[in-house]
Image 1 (cartoon, rainbow, N blue to C red):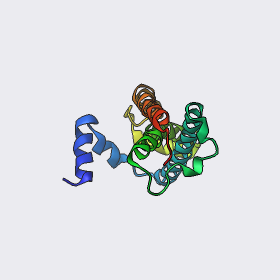
Image 2: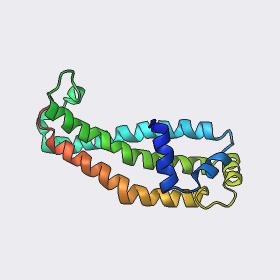
Image 3: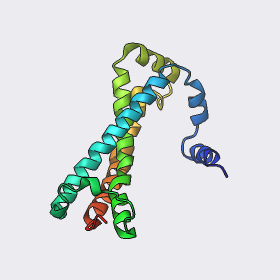
Image 4: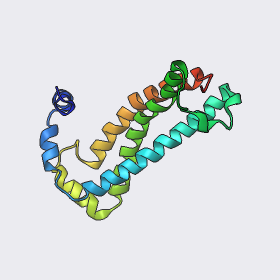
Length: 162
């Protein structure tokens, strides 16, 4: 089963009505909102990684000044898994926070806000308040604890960079 079909089946089960909501999204504002979201995602992921690296240095101060050796070519499996655990799970909270901040940025742009309100058509999941309320619950109940927790394990386990 192709990945896009798997995603559709998952969305059908977890988010009833998503197809109808997607069909109403016709505004040209969705292009800049996507660009801003990916920019914020990259910046937030990097900021979370840097913060976790600083925490890693508390446990392993001998790694200070060796960030450029974080993922060297030919590294052994144990450090690879630990470094992947340190970096990759931070994508989850970064994504959730980027979505919320992107919504906030575009809410302050009057024409964008009006276009999105028209598209929402009263659907509480598409309104600014409804979307962000749900995102905040997901971010603080799932994405942050899971992402930070797994990253903490990786930061602690990463005793050797090679």
